[in-house]
Length: 258
View 1 (tube, one colour):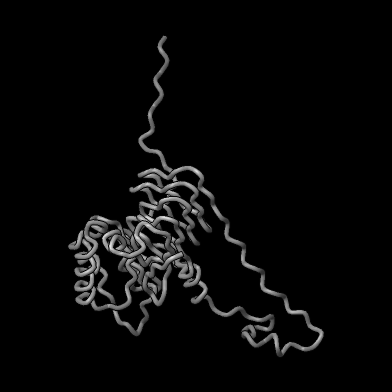
View 2 (spheres, helix red, strand yellow; view 1 turned 90 degrees about the horizontal axis):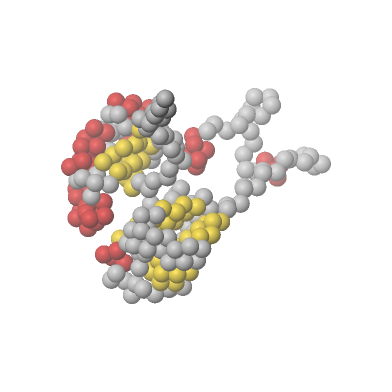
């Protein structure tokens, strides 16, 4: 008797990491947003066309007034961007996102910390502020804050080929070439000891102090904490093809010699 053929599952559920462009919304003027987005797309249309994006609304405050999120999403789609998720803290923004069928992403740790109320002391009074240590009675031993866990460094010794994606929760060290079409990203710094092509993203969790160090800059895109430069700008830089470091200064990407 023939064995019953195995039933093939309709789907497989797997975890993966993807890079999304984040649009950090700083105001509720949708007309100004449309104008600025049109100008940005004119500069980088080939890179951003049909890109999925996250709308980051956490900087909006009650004083900014209501945001017409549906119009904002429609403007993005006109410019071939596809909003897939929202990161927000105002209840009205979260409600609009849910109504539009957008995913709701948690706030980054620093936003959650800013929202959290001050811890209460044992008697119910607010905990002492930064100057409490100086006013503690002699002989007391206030508990020291636990040190932050060190970031782990990931080392890649093999070439990173086109289509591959490499991610490090801490710093990333690349000992072999990164090919065009590949993507390397890290929460911390990126150190490349061979030709660096493809998309290179440091500080992907918002670390503005992160840097990219490379011996041969030939990237399609470099980014630090969401601020980026594309190849059309990079190729005209004096350090194209040379040793360089990429950093963020006053909210702008800067490329300087090693």
